[in-house]
Amino acid sequence: MADKYSRREFLEKSALAGLAAAALGSEAKAANTLPTRVLGKTGARVSILALGCGSRLLAYKTEEAAVATINLALDSGITYLDTAYGYGEGKSEGWVGQVAKTRRKEFFLATKIEPRDGATARRILEGSLKRLHTDQIDLIHVHALMGMDDLAKIEAKDGVLNALYKMREEKLTRFIGITCHNDPAVLKTALERHDFDCTQMALNAALQGMVGTEHGMELNPAFKTSFEHVALPVARRKKLGILAMKVLGQEALVGSGSGKSAATKLLQYSLSLPVAAAVVGMPTHAMVRENTEWARNFTPMPAGEMRDLSNRVSAAHKMALDLKFRDHVDC
Image 1 (cartoon, rainbow, N blue to C red):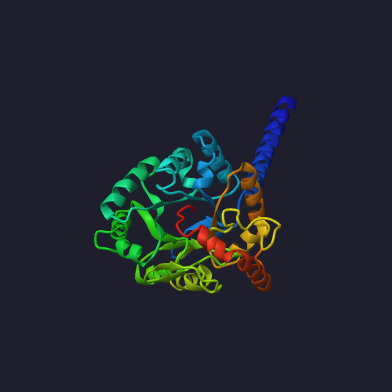
Image 2 (image 1 turned 135 degrees about the vertical axis):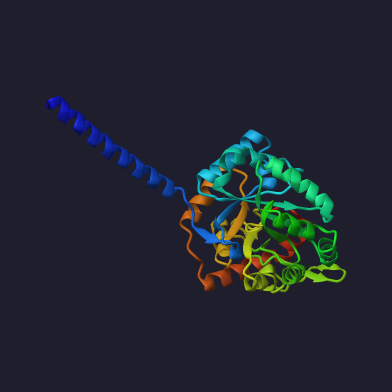
């Protein structure tokens, strides 16, 4: 009997230990999750913080270091990865693809395409599918809309937009979108004209955004010439999935000097706008850890504080930032 009781007791204790281990595992997993939001009409849920895999990922230099960073981001709760063929002519996509081999189901995958010719874009994106080790990309953006002349090339009959519509019909991508770094007026026009699912735009406390004209783009110190005031309302009205970028101005807005601010305040500002996520490049593991820890405890910034921060930062940096990113294509 003693042996029988001991065995029963052992089994009961083992079962309890297993339940305890499972509970601890769930708690650990929960501790590494980030708040999520719905990506507009796509219905997909994504973490409020996304990893930008542009120049900041390429700064890791080697595939091994980049893959370690992407894995750290996923382990820390990020579920949205943003890459592009233009980031190292496929290098970034290749590094993301090494992670996708084993973790594809854990993240929403976005890439971007620069060529405006539909046939060229299609050929490159077929290569992107191979580099990313997937048979379907969640979201493909037209990369870096630059002005009305550029929009005309994009929307031409043989342009990239029709190629993307075709890829969406073929289920090679679930959704299509467009990004813009500098000209809110032309992005507004593009969003009004066409059937996009998502858009990614520069949304920061400096109120980034130049004035589009028939001759190109012009600097204007007026704060209402910004993505926040011009393009964002259209994206909201059309229920698009909205991604913020240039949140930190690639660190140009971060610091303690005149018109600068803490990175956490800049993140809080952008994530207090009606966006699904902020796409941020993170050139160090410390930044990945710090940003995800902060995002885990995100609370919206009060409207008055947003106005004060934006007035202070935009007065000091809007024009300089508009110049800095006038011809920029990085996230």
